[in-house]
Amino acid sequence: MTARQDVYDAVDARRDEVVTFLSEFLRIETENPPGRNYREGAAFLGNALAERGYDVEYVEVPEAVVERHYPDRTAYERVNVLGRKSFGDGPNVHFTGHYDVVPAGADWTRDPFAAQLESGRLYGRGASDMKSGIAASLLAIDALEAAGIEFGGSITQSMTVDEETGGFTGLGYLVREGHLDDTDYCVYTECFDSSRVCLGHRGVLKFRVVAHGRKAHGCMAQDGTNAISAMSDFLTRVEEHREELHRRTTDLPVIPEGSRRADISATMVDAGYSENVVPDRCTATFYRVLVPDESVADARNEIRERIAETEANVGASLDYEEIMFAEPTSVPRDCEVSQTYARNVAAFHGEAEFVISPGSDDQRFVVNDAGVEECIVYGPGLLDQAHVADEYVPVEEVLTAAKVMAVSTAELVGDLTR
Image 1 (cartoon, rainbow, N blue to C red):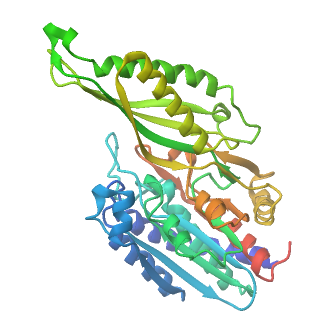
Image 2: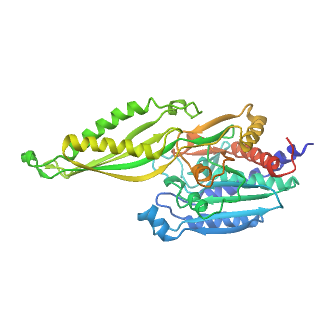
Image 3: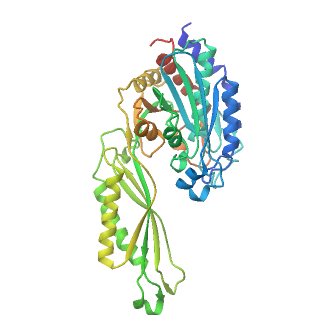
């Protein structure tokens, strides 16, 4: 029996164990916003790492840093978890994933935090996005050790917060504090399913625009300046800009194919006090998506130009307020970690599919800020299950992803050959 098959068998032998672990993990309601129960989630993960022999560190985010990014959430603790195992000189492989989940919302047909196993699927908020990714990376290293693989480097596991709202106090904070400075290979275990190797993501700019007018009684509207009318002018310019953005496309393998272009959407509009009052304020929120060749700075400038055009046309003032941004990110498909994973995916799915994410994620902190180009996104969750009601992950997906993670890690820092 080959060493590779020994690893696969070691993963399969832990099926019940990983289902139990993931079920307990899903029952911790780490909803973000606002970011509740992070302390409980961090303790659960830290204990799991310690039980496996990792050196564990809890990285707490100072309140001043939280306030800078999330001023309305300083009452909620931000706690990130780091675990490390060193086996000797050699490369450091860093697995990272976020343990915050989006709010469960309505329309579930089962309890979103009960972690129900039905027909090989484990249901719960965060099952695909992305607590299963964390479970798979832990399982992968467990299996390697059980199979007797000898390592020539080190393994780091980080579990972070706030990815769902930008990641600035999660992986972004770990990068700024130098916790990824010695990383040679990084695998971000976000949900793309076990057949895909994700090389990067589009960028995003979230912002709001506030149009200011002057109140008046509806029967004397001529005495006021209607902020809704000013916003209507700006929205018209945004729609014209959208047509221009759709002509900016990329040849990179963004999925779905319809997302291989830049875009902008107005997502929320708020104005008015009463049916007989001309409103002096109208606020609209926007979601601007960038293809990899664009920059956030250029996107900002294009919005400001259209704000200036509206101000000149209608005589009202408009303010730009930024919510968050993420620069586009991508790494070459021929980098070592990408090719290693692709080879091992092929054992289960045939040729691996290389993709670029339609949204943004924490990979950008590793690549753009920490300067680690050997960084891919690979995880067992299903992309179409992210943020939906009745979210689930197939248990078999978790096992397959763990097998790919395990043998890929063994090729990168262990004694397993191709």
